[in-house]
Structure formats: C-alpha cells, structure tokens
Image (cartoon, rainbow, N blue to C red; front, side, top):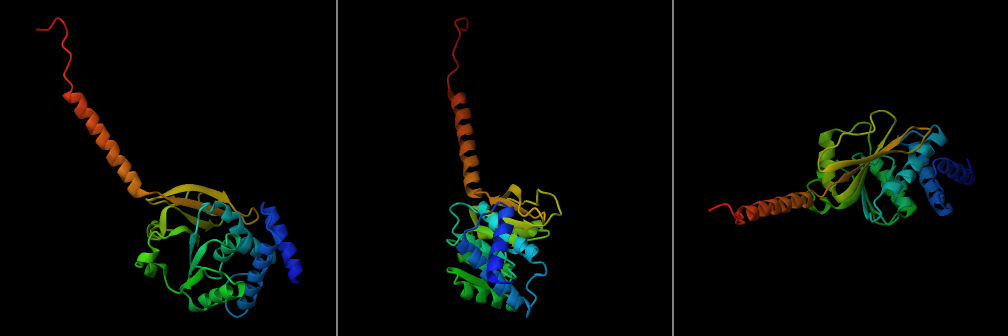
Length: 247
C-alpha cells in the first residue's frame, strides 16, 4: 500500500474515534508503522495481519488516550514497550514528553532504538531490563507524571511496585481489552479515576489511576487532629458560668 493511501486510511480510522490528527502527526505515525512492518518481517514484534485493526490498536488507541495525560505532564515511562505502542504514538502526540521505554528483550529494544533514530525522537531512551531493576534507581523514584502499560490483568503487587515511578498527582494508564470489569484492582496510594472507551470496534478501554499525595493527606489528618484536640482542651479549660441560684 502506498504511503499516501496509508495516510488517508489512518486519518479515517482516527476520525471514527473522534480524533482529527493534523497531517504532520499522521505522517510520523505512518513512518513509525512502516518501520514496524519492516522489522516485523524479521522479528515478531506484534500482529499486523489486518491493517485497520493494527491502526486502531497501535496508533488510534494511544491518540485517544493522550487526552487523559495530565496537562502539565513532562515525563512518561512505558513498561513492557515491545513494538513501541502505546509509547511512541503517545510521544508523537505529546512531543514535550520525556519518554523512557522499558523492554527486557534485547531484539525488541534494538527496534525501539532504531525507531528513536529514524523518527528523530528527542528526550527518548530505552532501558533493556526488567522494571523491577529500575526501582532501586533514585533518579526514577517519583520522577514521572505518567506511566503507560498494556495489560490483560494487573496484580496488586505489580501496581504497588509501579506506582513508585509516579510523582504525587501522576497517572497510571492501563490499556485494556474488552474483558474484565471497568473498575480495576487498585492499591494505595493509587486511586481509580475512571475507565474510558478507546476504540469501539476493538471494545478497548483505558483505565486511569491517580497517585495520591500520601504525605499531604497524612499531614492534613495530623493537623485536623491537633485542631480537634486544641478545641477540646479549650472547652475543658473555660470556666463554667454559675447561675444565680447556686451558692
């Protein structure tokens, strides 16, 4: 299929999901897709058998999800990046993001680095390791505004680990299929924000969780308790009025 045909096809698929992508963004998304397709002939990165389905899953879903990034988001970490979606389309849609992609498999990491080079993605890097290995790096602790992850099912212990990458107020974005309840497993300090439809034909969904500022919440409760105690002490120390009938 000619690049021009891919451009118009992607624009139509995006429009069906309510996204009207500008031509420069469509051009870069198609360039990413073509690179992915070339590499996919040599190593199994993802399924590309149906072009429309691949466009919806790999490109349109992240464009829809980009609306749920915090307005002030500056840093995104993507876990299990594989063939680069949703991370690379999110980066293309929000170029101000500093992006870290985490992928344990060396061959997939090689593709991600080539995509960074070919697409000239600034402030983007790849970590070829398990995300657990990054948890001990202080520069990544509570350093990110958003974390993205494609997940069929996410266990509570995984969420407990992943939230350590997010700063208070940051969002964890779970890309999910049609199965499972809308309310996903949530562990403190994460709070379920909402589950939103992505692409109707795929019945895909995005679950968003927000990290509470535990320190601020704890401080609020401490100060509230102090005020209550001070109020009680004040009432106890106030002299009781004596009525005229008392001697």
